Length: 390
Image (cartoon, rainbow, N blue to C red; front, side, top):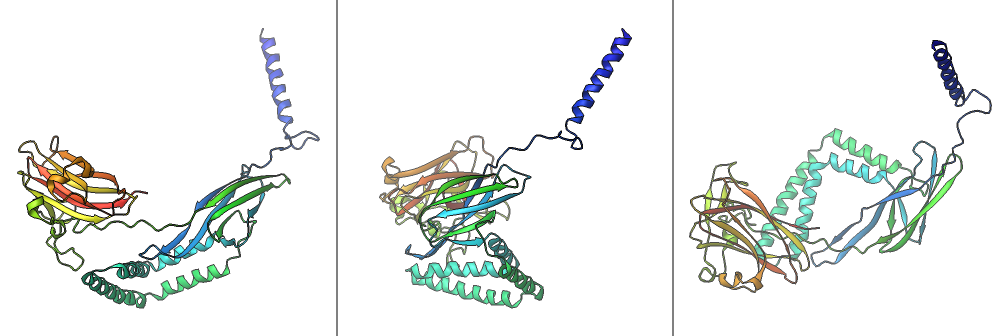
């Protein structure tokens, strides 16, 4: 029996040696099978369109740039890439490294760029502002920022200036983008449909082709973020440096809407923002009222923080109300409520603020009312913020 097992061992060993020799490249006419896998091309597209509009939504300029990056299933084989585009008239090619180097320059000049952007925003707002007091305040802010900008530019170190110069020289020395680049930027002349094809060829001469229709859409103005006055209820936060934290929240008529809320002051770090919050006594006689401008058709997200006492059951409500409402009673009618959220004190902790959010659609409205009310117990609200839902 041992003899047979001994022979079987050598038979298995011989078979393994034989199989190993079949993949030995040193043996004549024996080796790996020919690689017959051809390339499977694909590419990704990233929209890097940029534009600028004036405050009347008139287009000042637009760049219809798209970043294209080619790929294939051939991770190790050498490959060649060839792009085609139809129609090609007016389409220009940009080296992909241009934007990377430009961002590096902005990084070197971070403080200067931040001030330039702040000035640019004010320059945008001033021509569209009809309130001369606000215009004067904005111009004063811009003059102050210009002084800071001049100082920031004068204070640039020799090292920073040399780094910027080196980066600018790198941009100038970049080779022009070609249709054979694996990654490049197509700058389209304007909106329309373009057929972009890609041929990938491997190092064995095998090639394959893929094509997509790229739709370049007309740029549209960015939806402006509404401005909420005194959103954190802090003193001196109006455009001119004035305000008691609640001036922006007073209703047109206290007889029709109720008296404005009180202000609660805490030491730094207790409240979600600053040292002041709005306070609503438990009798529900105080309200907050602020009308803000919105863009018809846009969707917004309003966020804020609330805290409630625990003496008895109570709640606090934040509503988005149509300007058709002229009294508190009308504001509570379903027809005038665009969105609303009520939070109570069940399970809450005294002096602990909780964040909430309301999503609402502007619909046909060009302005809406943010209405703050409560009942049952003393309630506080703080740190309002609003954003455009993309």
